[in-house]
Length: 83
Image 1 (cartoon, rainbow, N blue to C red):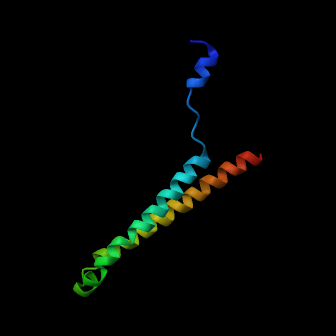
Image 2 (cartoon, rainbow, N blue to C red):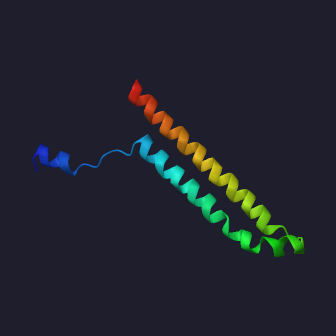
Image 3 (cartoon, one colour):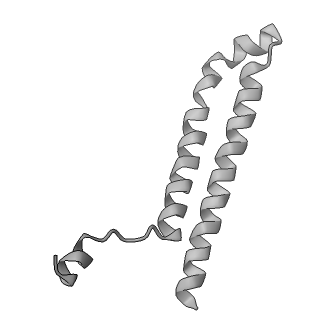
């Protein structure tokens, strides 16, 4: 295999920009689908179990954390581009 052919088969490195976009997308999906338990929230609150309220709090924190980390990774990628 020649050097030119070998370069064509090499995979590109995953950039911080790609990682940031994936994390932001994942965080938005967690927040979007985290609202589904709200269908059962009224019964949960009436029973006093508070399981779904705790679950939504945890999902919200995870979603916001993923989005924040994704934005930080995207900013890191743009700082490297500017330098």
